[in-house]
Length: 63
Image (cartoon, rainbow, N blue to C red; front, side):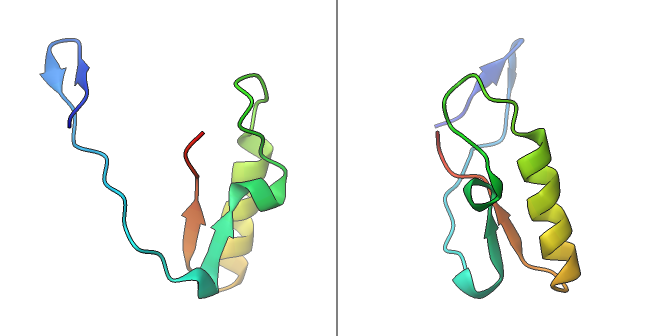
């Protein structure tokens, strides 16, 4: 499945396996999947924690 935008096909979104050891879920940093909340701060905080840990994955879950 791909997304069509302005007549151009966008890359397919894929689900991948994640090593949970260095995974930083934005929900753990206050993100809410309510369709109203601006989650910029939670994403920034998760990215900062990931960087401080020496790398890893910032997880933005479905929702």
